[in-house]
Length: 215
Length: 351
Image (cartoon, rainbow over all chains, first blue to last red; front, side, top):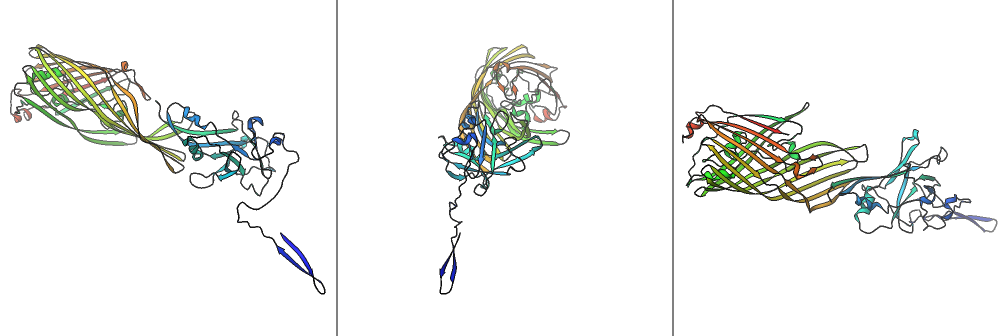
């Protein structure tokens, strides 16, 4: 931001300016914007505070991501430990979450981004960290367009490391994952995701090896 | 102390005829993939001349060797005799299919045994013989991932085996009727390793199962005439206690994770079947001895199943023929080098 000012001199005004720079290296980024939606989606009217979670069972199995007004898809795995109910002793070998965007929620103007970022949030939906793959890089949900001609596109998120962490601790975690557009602080992308497990909107694929069937 | 009336054992030429029908079973191959099943391949070879006689000897009366197949024979140990027997066994196997062929040579200790006389008509002996042997390696087993149409490929190998320490007692009830009893301690380890890779993940398991148990048996010899003997044996069913030690490691996206580290667990007991055998032997024309055995192993009654299948009753037939030029000779040269090759036929039928 630049402030122009002038000081009256003997014959004329002398013009000066002062720059106010934004320190982009500090964290959190000191920027401010306010975006408000006049007529939010009927389902989202209840979301008046950051701590409110809206279950997809109350939104016709839809989940929403809208940059700017801070709406994100939150993923919880409260029942993941039921894999231990499988007969025998076993261990998790692979996990992958597939989430399909709702049909007709995207078009050329409202394009799907190739990736979504994944963050870990606490029970108050405060970001705690970015989800890291076991190889050290930031985990991403990647759009799979292999069968786009059949409208079969979905975001695929490798979760073996995160779920292994949930399974190996005794207490229940109150953490959750949220999905955000990759450049969530500089875009206003929006996504509508289908979470219906019955029409394969959202699928969690676990590969679980049973090494002792007797127990 | 040592006095051995040694009649040499002639097995210069051995012909095996194996008829495997209905189910694939195999015996006596230590590097055999069939040792995957149960406790491994059951060791057929025993002590001394039995090996050259088609593994028969339940009805074989011998007073100058250890016959480990029928405890009743221990009653025949002559006065002042002390027998011992140490054996080594070598095998050469060749496996081939359309694309590959592979040979395996294994040399292994096969037995150590001793026998002595306790009193008139009462003999005893101790033997240590491998009971079963496991040695297999299966590469590239394709298995369906349950619930999907995908498969994964794994490598499995196993090694180990059980030993049988056997105490025998034989007693002559009548000059032509002998009874025997034996008690065996079965013990040993079987190790199985499996490893596979799925997508970005790897899995490997090492399991060592320790088995131990005691088994009892009875035997009988009856001489119908000087040259014709029948015998029978029974091995009572028993169950071996299993104790498993397991180590599991996996790798998720390149990170090693130890799932279990040498943890102990009881595994299911292994049930040994009732084994009933009969045998006969006859001396013909002084130089020939023929011996035949039939043994039935009642696996069905153990009610055991594995993921690979269930156990089925076994019928084992064996017949052996021995030729000794001069049975009364004490000279080693006369018995070994003067003999013609002997054809010994073994017919194993597993149903």
